[in-house]
Image 1 (cartoon, rainbow, N blue to C red):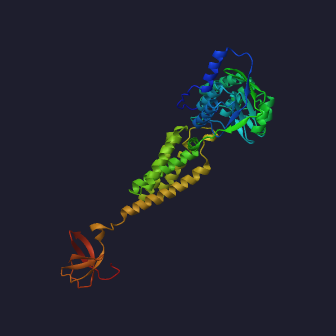
Image 2: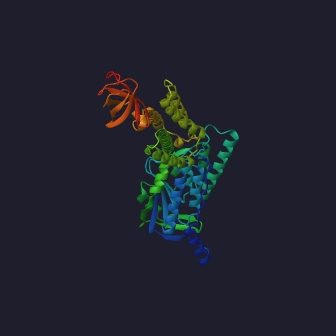
Image 3: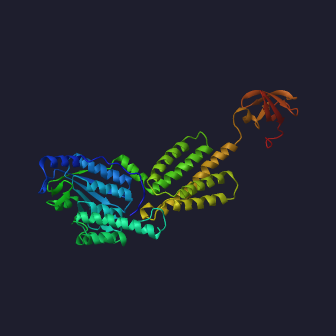
Length: 446
């Protein structure tokens, strides 16, 4: 389970909890289980790292289910783990929910690892699909490398205390919960059922609903018995905004955006007026900044990436015989490896992304910046400067003054050497509306 200090989220009181408390105050304490008629059950599906996007999505799903009068929320989960702060926000929502929350680890091949273990144990009902697994909740350092012994012990003990309290509250296997943190224990769905880590094993959501029929769970307002026989399942979509933010939270996407943004801005600086590289670069950098704020970033890695691109730019402007290009490649590779400060697998940038990005960055930078440099070094094509070096035809004898036709225009010309009518003459300089020229003896000289 990964740890990182992120900005907290203030959660508004749940409408369902307030309603339940008012009913309790008006009717008195309930001593028997309340029978919930299963009119509707909300299904929230989340696959990926537990991060602020996951916390917001599941919070919204629970609020929607409670406000809409749903009888339960099923969270279909498949996660490799994630951030400690986001995980705790979700668990707070679950433990204070006014309706039953069912965590269903699915589909087959899915898992509830690291932070997912905590979420599954915190659910009112925990279920898994065949072919899934749960476990490996040992804390992972977000700063990269190994934590010192004291800090490692503090982090581990904190996680153990938290997971034990969750397991005790739900009546689940406390010993295994501790092993999941201290020893990274992991089990299959059938082993989890035998060890009383979960409550059910179900093939899919319809099979899960059948097994939930008649099950009693304890909510803050008291015990509730589920009646799921005739339940209508309503899916709660993530929405385009959260889908986009989820994609941006991927370290590989953040890495790509930052690289594209830096190249775009530098290309615009070397090609003023190109507009497109600058627009794309600015948008990419802003999106990259959003991505990086939700990831454990090593700023030395960021600087190395930028330095690598700068080396590619310099290679296009300075004769270094390839040394700057090699330095750029090395800088980008080291920067890519150092960018994310975490040992967690799901926070690492893939080599399948690093290599193509480095090669493409070198090629694009050299091409775009090279075009800009060549454009700056190209002789002027318009105005007085554009006339220098141009060759015209003498319309009158130049002795030394006369008329010269050039670019379809007739100019006053002064020749340093007399020239006959029809002779070719090259422009040396321009003063006002007068051209100072010299005769061209042959076409090769022209």
